[in-house]
Image 1 (spheres, rainbow, N blue to C red):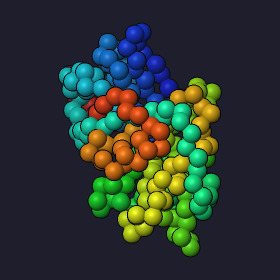
Image 2: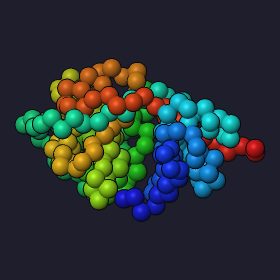
Image 3: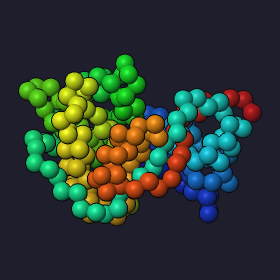
Length: 218
């Protein structure tokens, strides 16, 4: 899963991921930002801490800034509650895309989903008849690197209040719990989601910014 990545810096950690259509830049610290930006294809999706965000503004135009929390799973047991979860496969991608489209009007839909994430990672969902009404999965799945990032969690607006988000997220945790580092990102302005993840054993690690960087002449 990390076959198309580039690492930059020494004590500062900067990573450019090329696996999906839009490059993703992760950064803690600023020392290697300029070098990393020389190796991206624009535009670039950012997941960076505040000092790195400020440094990137010197080299690119930044939009869609959102304050996020990075959370890590504490390792506390999170047994999957009983329920009709199913492991999703490539055949479920159209249903996933329909599910995520439900949240586009309210800007609640996951904003970073690629079909290959389903086949390369771990996704669980709940169907109501032929409609997929809740799902959770992984953004990054790298057992060889002993790391996984959970994401793409969404429940259809008309099906909330039934514990489906907890159900599918717990199923993913159960499937990846033996991997050393299990993390996720959540919007700082979404207290309901933060409460859910904390109840499943996640703890807040650090705040950071998500956004999009667009090249400009320097």
